[in-house]
Image 1 (tube, one colour):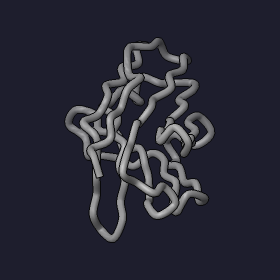
Image 2 (cartoon, rainbow, N blue to C red; image 1 turned 60 degrees about the vertical axis):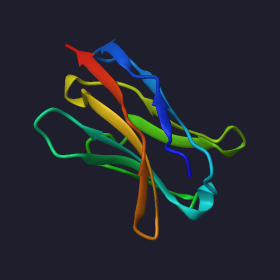
Image 3 (cartoon, rainbow, N blue to C red; image 1 turned 45 degrees about the horizontal axis):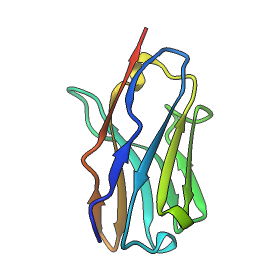
Image 4 (cartoon, helix red, strand yellow; image 1 turned 180 degrees about the vertical axis):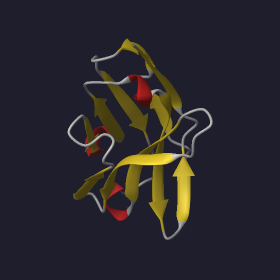
Length: 115
């Protein structure tokens, strides 16, 4: 499959919202674990939200209740709706698709939350 492409990052004030998009191709969504990761400077990469086999949704405790992962299979696009953003959400956000231990990840989009 082709490397997915993220978009929608930017600068937002604390308490604001952003919606990230991940355009993918060559993927049958229900056959993958699809997820959004983030990595802040000096920190390890963190899985914040995932959809397993198209139907099981999981969130990290740090974003639960604030972020929502979804997909529009007809548009081959996955989304991450981020509400009530906090400065600690500042990071590069990546979408990733995993199947049988093989990962395909995009280059990322930067989200900066100002206080």
